[in-house]
Length: 448
Image 1 (cartoon, helix red, strand yellow):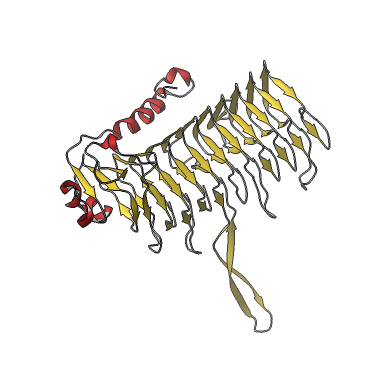
Image 2 (cartoon, helix red, strand yellow):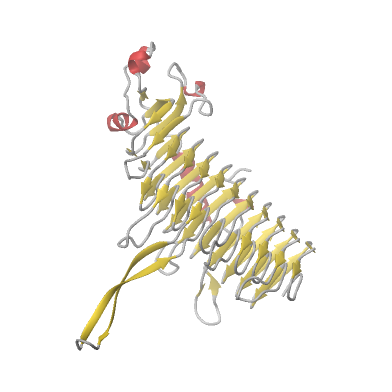
């Protein structure tokens, strides 16, 4: 699929789709000025070009200028990298290559390991690219693997794994275990985000009007955990002394968006645009809502040719809605002319074997427009309402799709029913679709 074919996504305003699709393609091709080489063991390399290079990536970055490329030989580099504007870092070299295309990034793993540094593995700068790197063991409050803010940035052929975001009571937000994106334009292509941990967005967090494309990538086995923040003080009368006794309060923020979390403020932040194509979101878990993906706020989300499977919307005692996807927004405008702030399209995709403790085994949606076309929603399960889909106050269009073998079972205190769909105050359109084999241990095997 050509992502520049905006006619395929006719409802996306042109002011969104052209800038956010064109910009990442531009930043992946900076003007090439000079090539800098990184080889940890220069003295052992007979190639004079490589042997006179740098022994750390960070040293090469400091010596670089906009348009430069940095070529990095295979091996493990224990460092944290802060990029400068307009440079590209390529991994996967043996140390004797003449042309960039001679490298084999799959066989020659170039690993940046931030163990013991307690920082993001890589901090992005604008108009930059990384290609053929493994980024692991980063630890930060925001973006354990990659931190991207107010930048245009491209990630290709990379593995982002085993990174962590965590904070203390004074940190209100702990986001983006693998990748943190805010106010940025980003392309992620042919990459894997694996086994990262955060409070919001175990794999990827995207916020504040960011424009993101994810192509041919895998978001797998990421998870979210709860985070405690300072809740101020609670004061009660001390009847023994006649005074007041105060003690600190701690608030627990439940983990949301096991694989991906897209979140902005409907009224304060610019709208986001996120396009996910030919990608897999699988095996992700969270403590609360959105096992595979959470999308909340103001903007557009498009999934085309994707697979969301084996994700769980809750663990332990926490409420969990939307095993595959949790989608939530608000209605804007004046009374009588209200419209949703969020539009979501799922096309040529499958959502299967996802689970939630509360509503929506596959999809939970509230106050938005959702179109499902040429897609399959099957074998999902919830302990409450809507084995396949739970919706409230939304427009739901199911076109040329299959809704099959989903289950609503009575394991939740929230009530249950609607094996296929439970829709409350929704406008539903179903055309040329198969609804079959959905069951409920209460009422409404197919729809309520």
